[in-house]
Image 1 (tube, rainbow, N blue to C red):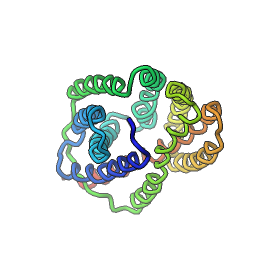
Image 2: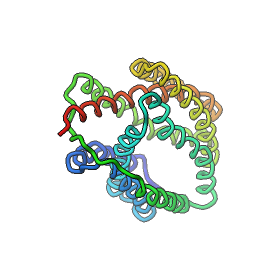
Image 3: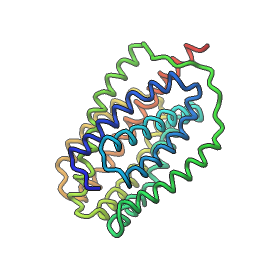
Image 4: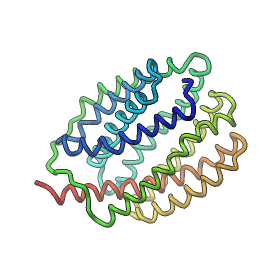
Length: 282
């Protein structure tokens, strides 16, 4: 792509501003928020089209932020409605972690091969076709009419969640450095794809096991605490990695951290928000 680190930072800065503000506006204006998921898929496809022809960090940041801000909030709401409480963690992990991981097991290796032998543009073109297919399927989803109005939760628990996710957002900055770090150790894009593929297999297995345990025990808070601790340990451990084998070996730790943290905090936030929405029904 030819972007500098500074330009990538600029893209992510604009992206997260859009992610933070746009869903709040849409939740106030759109009555059937679930239906936005189709727009999210379409805007993601549009983002890859923009990637081929535009190099402006501002335009790329706006396009990327628009795609994420319209897809993920509506996706989370939809999967909550479609899941049963007794197996919600497994359902959430299936849609948010396991299926993407399974689909992505071969993806990094294939993507790295395409980039190495052809170009980024060809990989983007393949992504555009896949997103167009997903968009056509998404418009056939039967959305349920909403009976609750949206309001910002004013509970102490939500305030704690809000503060926690501010710090979590700061920690997400490591994704700017992590791909470059893996690429440095792997030396080629194809080898980088193989490393990420091996990691995805291990993480996928661990995610399902933790999700199954979460449904049985019902200890969301404890899982979130365990996940935060394991995540901190992984950050310190990955800094000492000197080979691609070290990265793959640390994948189980990363998988455990992500699975515990995701299923503890993510489900509690959804439950809290939905409870407030129900309490403020028309």
